[in-house]
Length: 288
Ligand SMILES: Nc1ncnc2c1ncn2[C@@H]1O[C@H](COP(=O)(O)OP(=O)(O)OP(=O)(O)O)[C@@H](O)[C@H]1O
Image 1 (cartoon, rainbow, N blue to C red):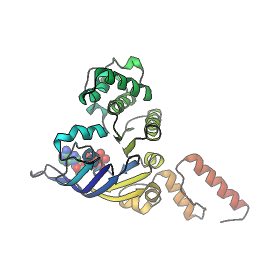
Image 2: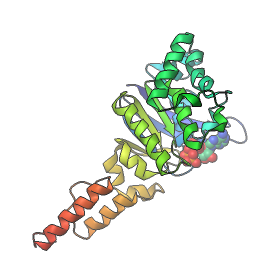
Image 3: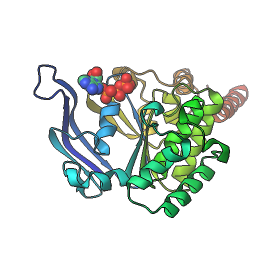
Image 4: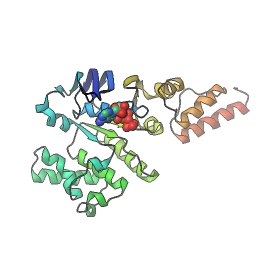
């Protein structure tokens, strides 16, 4: 098991008058190579959950174990960060150096790699994320939203973690920027074989990309399983304060109207094919 959470509870402002329980009774196991989507309405505990996974937060109750290392073991915090990289929701929180190069290089430098190795890693991630050379000497604050996002991902990738957590990686980006980030994430999963954990408000994005889905509701796990079981269960989504993606709601409605749908599809092209096929059957009087 790569990440294991056992009976985890996390309280902000612990033992102060401002205590706020963010998570309770969390039990989770994540294996290497998985692609997991975490969904849940605002305040359900998503960001807290992922910060527990790389030791940025430590639970007051229960244990989080990453590759055999308990996150309570502060002396091994670096080893955990090396294994699990977290790209923050707001790249501004992560970028703080004067130049893009220095920002990307910060992580591997901090892990103690030689300057040559740091240079090699920066070059490699820039190629992968299509970050042009001329950007490297610019200030990260001069960049567009999409560029900042890619630099923040590059900084994490340069540490070569086994697992990459992305908290709302496409928030505020236009369609082109979103597509670019998605193709990077898919590449990391399929080609680089990374374990990916994605938090997104967009159920469409999670439905399209992920294999396993975790639904959080008021700090508890409401569902953990294959994505189709989550997205085809409209009642479950509604109970969790979520609306099913339009593309799946459409299929849910068509099914209620008698369309033969064996498996819900996640792409517009496939749904269009399925509708055409059903209408052809209907014309031939073979169904409906
Ligand atoms: N630093 C903090 N101090 C006190 N309470 C906090 C803090 N950060 C989060 N919380 C509270 O903990 C709960 C879980 O917050 P968290 O940010 O993990 O939820 P989320 O699902 O990521 O929300 P969002 O979708 O808005 O990012 C919320 O009730 C939130 O108000």
